[in-house]
Image 1 (cartoon, helix red, strand yellow):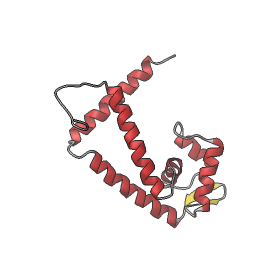
Image 2: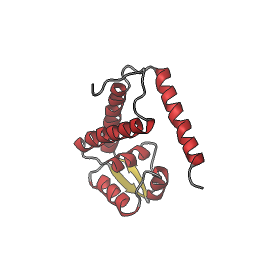
Image 3: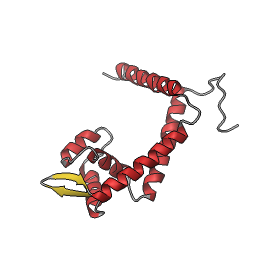
Image 4: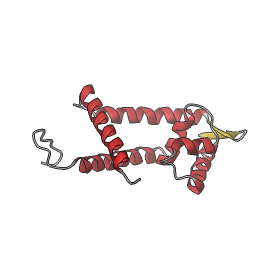
Length: 146
């Protein structure tokens, strides 16, 4: 049955489940943000600015490796300024009150989604899953091309 989980048999490799979860999370994120008029890249900028003002270069450094940089980043930041979510002062971007409110709204939405995604998963199970994926990622990095 689609969506069922047989804990006794692992019938697909971990890569399948990682890619499937990543695609599902990306789709949920895209859908939620687009309803609020944001792109994923714009959300990432708002999230960086939640900790305080930053220059465009600092934002790009913080978002690396997920940032596309260049024209796309400038376009995203200009859109945030145009929509009165971010303002520029002395070469640094900062959240407006509207930007802070939208950040809080999106954060709450993500917390609700995370709660639903982890329904039926204990804290220890979640920690183990994250720890295993982290170790596998580190091993893959170690084994990767020189």
